[in-house]
Amino acid sequence: MLPSPITATVDFELDGVQHGFLKLPHSHDDSAWGSLMIPITVVRNGAGPTALLTGGNHGDEYEGITALIKLANRLRAEDLTGRVIIVPMMNHPAALNGTRTSPIDKGNLNRAFPGSPTGTLTERIADYFTRYLVPISDLVLDMHSGGRTLDLLPFAATHRLEDEQLARRCMEATLAFGAPNTLLMAELEGDALFDTVVEGQGKVFVSTELRGGGTSTPESVALAERGAENLLRHAGILAGAPTSAATRMLEIPDAAHYLHSEHAGLLEFVVNLGDAVRVGDLIARVYSMERTGVAPAEYRAGVDGIVIGRRHPAKIALGDTFAVLAVG
Image 1 (cartoon, rainbow, N blue to C red):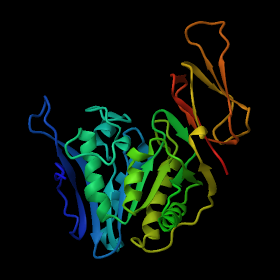
Image 2: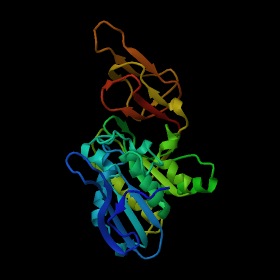
Image 3: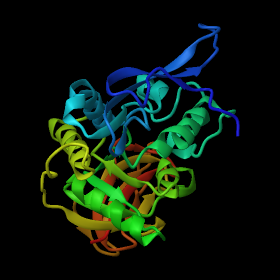
Image 4: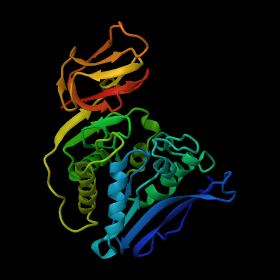
């Protein structure tokens, strides 16, 4: 395999606090020999575990980005035993553009793993994390939220894994995050996710969904900050025990719990985020925006569950996910 075209301006083995960049060459009309400059912080204090903390895997998910920028600004080497690597905006072009995907190549980073050193710019970023950052890490936290198109009850998540010991370690870390909800998730397009790469290398992985709507709130940022520090304590990198918090155990067991629209138009919810629904209950209607006098399409629950996620914009297109259900 060819080496990555990305180079780091930080030394991962050096003690202290370093703020630098992952430099990816990018020649374009405005800069013939330019580079993408992805911000990175490394804080190290001697031997110990390594935690990789990431946000901005999707560029319009601001809770994790904000919390990790703040953590990078305040973390001190003398507070640690081991190493923390912080990349607040993995897909930096998308974050600068305020979009889920990269404006350069339309790449969805969390559908580009394991990546390629000779692929698109997005695939090259994925490859660097796969072959350089994950292997030197013991614990990975990748913070997500619903972005501009989804609003979700805040949760930390892990997956059902064949390796029972790794599954137990991942669940322990997920619980340590301290979110109001803790989920076992069946993912869509799982083979191309960062999650799968990390777990495939036998590393502890925790993901989150922390509200969304293309913004953040004081509560969602505080949860992201507290959760990241809880995981560092759980790993023994920060001193002390994680802050205890009550959590509700839920699961998204399969694709049937992701509800997709078969119509385009105006979306009207008749249930709220967090409501419980039973099979047959009306969840939403979609109205034609082409003409009046047309009965709306009605969408009913095909399974029992709790509405853990909902589409944020009212305008909906054919194929859009409009609701996600979880079971207790």
